[in-house]
Amino acid sequence: MEAFASDTEPLGDTKGNEVDIMLNVERLHTPLLRSPAYPASPRDREALESHINELMKLGVLKNLGHNEEVEFTTPVIITWNNDK
Image (cartoon, rainbow, N blue to C red; front, side, top):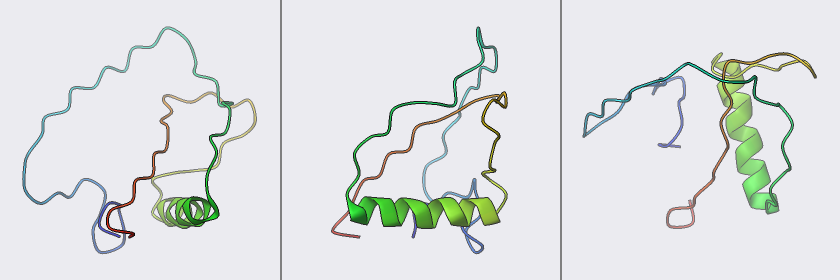
């Protein structure tokens, strides 16, 4: 799974182009943990669950409580490349 961090390819490793990413950590409000679910096919769900479990094992993601404040959130987008 080339697009995701793993034991052999840690988060942050890239091959090819270098990109500078400017981060702005200022926020006006605490993001809500709840958002509507997007429809996902069984294939998407299986792939997503597998990658989430792997990222949790690596310590990149963690479970949060129902009303726990977070520094940031991000959406999940799955794209398929040549049926992989």
